[in-house]
Amino acid sequence: LNESLQNQNSDLQRKIVRADGKSSKFQQELVRQKSAATGLTSERSELLSVNAKQQGEIDRLMAETKKYSAKTIELNSKVCELQAKLSDVETVKYNLDSEKARLSTQLQLSETNSKWAEEQLAKKSEATLTLRSQSEQRIQDLKEE
Image (tube, rainbow, N blue to C red; front, side, top):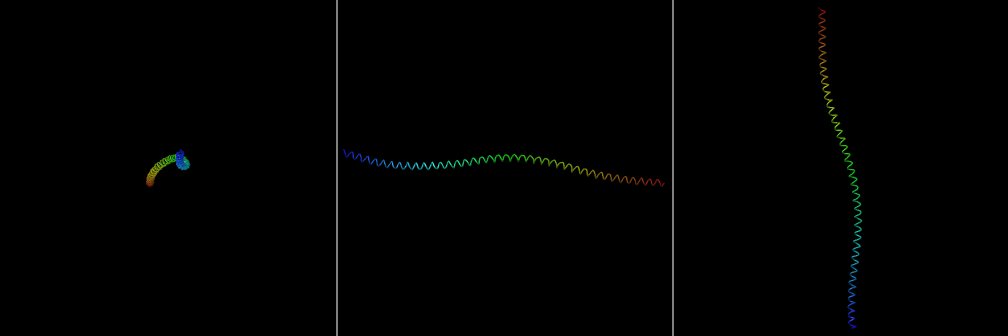
């Protein structure tokens, strides 16, 4: 009986040693997995930090984009105003060019009329001189008769 108990005790001690070995391996694996989990948690924290920085940069760029969009709209509005003013200036220029052409035509017509009037006056003066000369000649002729 004693020998049987000793055999059972030896078997149990061997099983305990094997269980202790397995337990030690499990504990080592658990430590390794905990270490890996800690590394992943640290990496996750770093990624979250990087993500937060990137989101901040995205938000800043979006705000800047909105600011530039507003400025672009303002500049486009000014461009439209300037185009309207340019159109007004071009209309005034066209009107001035039309008036200049009309006045130039009127001046040419006046010059033509003036030349014609001078010619007519010269003809009338010549005719008057001729008539005066003829009249004086006649008066002279009549005095002599």
